[in-house]
Image 1 (tube, rainbow, N blue to C red):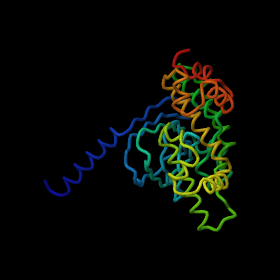
Image 2 (cartoon, helix red, strand yellow):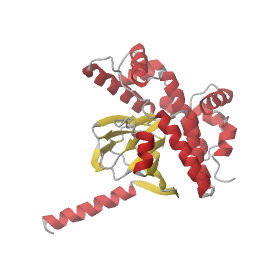
Image 3 (tube, helix red, strand yellow):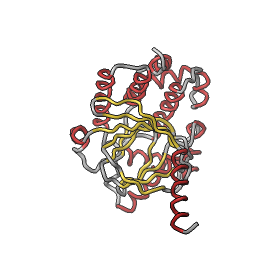
Image 4 (cartoon, rainbow, N blue to C red):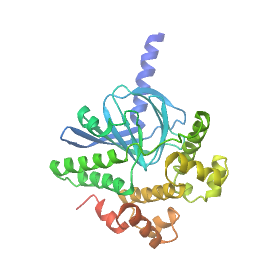
Length: 293
């Protein structure tokens, strides 16, 4: 076999492997908007790519976490938010905490994207509230239940409005020197990656988490708040609640087990935290995300 034929054969094999490494399922197609469920099984910790965006998309993470580099901007993606892409964006992805992350990709038209997200052309990464995340998951549950296109379109536009309000919240410390800002940004990225490793990581104390990323607890707390605009405690609690939401979405129904898995003092503590971050108690969330009406 000559070199050219071998190269084509290797390319075809690599494409086949790539197809097996993940799954993409179309969930909703209405009013010119396409919503797809993405399960990524890529296991490489180094950046893979480049690829190029072929449309305007809004991507929301639902579980796990991964690194994204889009148009030269690098950030960590986890269930507290997501990111935007524009046609032609060069992007790469890495999985420092392993495979299995789940995301929702919303593909929208140029005008719809511009109306909501082009006020700040440079924005890529954004955060969302627990209530917005629950709205997102409830939309997918409604699609699984077979809701009418009109209802799904209305839910989609409300979700995009909520995200547009949140877009731009993830910010940098503009008072620091550029070199310091980069170091601080790297520390936040590493902290996010550490917390995304799974429920056990979310049970770490502040001291233990600081040791993982190699700084003092005080420095970690101060820098995280300066860079993200939120406290590390609030961020960690957001991740814990998102983990519970995902488990409920996947069919786990024992709240006592979930409380232990995510480090809550007891089931009552889990209930209070879930209500605080989403506006709903876990039992109501369980019914809202059920596959059957």
